[in-house]
Length: 617
Image 1 (spheres, one colour):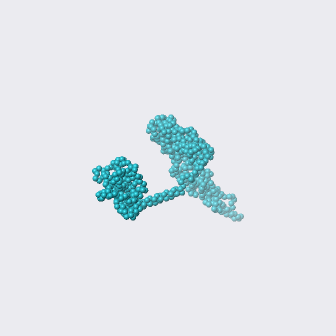
Image 2 (cartoon, rainbow, N blue to C red; image 1 turned 90 degrees about the vertical axis):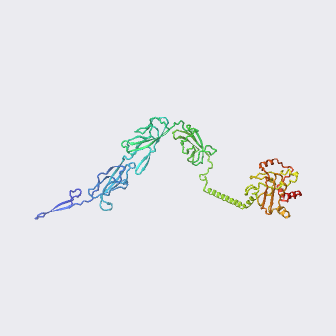
Image 3 (cartoon, rainbow, N blue to C red; image 1 turned 180 degrees about the vertical axis):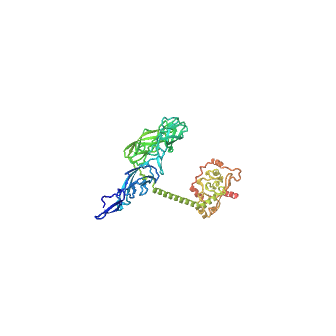
């Protein structure tokens, strides 16, 4: 029997030897050895050497790199099983379940994380909770401190950060300054957005930085302080224009870590006058129901927009193209580059005030003016949805335009068809007037400009009226060459012919005059209406021949140049007509009476006239 508890871990040997001695009176004793094997049972938990561990790890360490091994011990010599809490295993993992070697799971960036806390669990049973055997566990806290390494060059400030893969960059836009021509600035130059300054790109490191001008300082006009980066002038600039300096910033202890930037210095003529507003105080107006994007008005009665202008006397026209306008001390309005003031939001007060500022962007000089805006009673204003044309309006306009186009095409087609139908009549007119115009081919236009009748020869036999035969004649010009002839005034011309479309001296077929003469058996409808008499020098004879068909009209003009050497010109005719005076005793002819007289038969000729006609034949 066991006299006291056995502890396997305290025994020197797992085998205990017991000697048993058996004796009896009268007999010799007997001794036997008994070996007792002590079995080890799981009665002790695993233990870590310490409860809290601290590990220092450099940033950007490669993935799967080992950062340390933290093991636990168990006196029971049972195999141990390890695991990391899932909430802390983002950056690290264990090599396997039985070996607590901590490996890097993802890249460590000092700018992102500087300290990581891990919880390491160990137990002596693989799945103790699922078995009836007793099991023991233990926990250790691990703190991983990420160290910032010198992996980034200096960054000029201010800069814009960006990522390129796992690398981080910070890009500087450079610096800009201004100096006056032929003037040397004393002290460090004022630059925008600030003085030249670079710091170590590694946030937890403060490596010393030195500065130097690489190029652009050919005239040695500028110099830079190696420790501070301040730029000063050694002499005045003598050329107008920008000077671009390339500046190098590098670590003193590691020249491989460096960065460059540009400093642009504008050399310009000195500005003697800042921009100034035309007035120191302005007044504007806005309706109480105005919507955002409405313009401030210049008066109460009109809708003319309010506009401010700033003059710069350094310019001949007073207009500086580099002037920009700003609004100060108000959130109600904005100002455009052209000086118009635009409403930003609905106004809920009776008035508001603000300050306008005009800034010369090249020199930085500025001028200010005050603006007081009065809110006037609302007027009816169209809503933004009703401004402009709607799709329905445009569709209606398209329909109207299409209808007008179709109507125009119909009218043009109708006119073309009428002209096509009347083409035959036009050809007849041209054939009729072609010989009269002295042309081989019929001409168009002015076909009724000249008319020839026999009225000029009717009364030559009467000496008392022979001198006044020109009394009722009015010459009429034509646009084509005219033969010399006796020309009737417009009111004495023959009537319009309904068949050929021109004024002629023949009688149209089927007209009342033709029917009246034909019915009486008169030969007037079939003979010439010309009363031929002797012609004096300079006169002409015209024959009109008419057939039963009024469309077959033959007109023959005998020029008065026959038998003459020289041809009288139109100017001579005008001179001749200037001396003609109308006979006051000559009766005026009524156009209607003229037509009726033309439709009647001519008066019978005398015997002397008949004799003369026979002689001429």
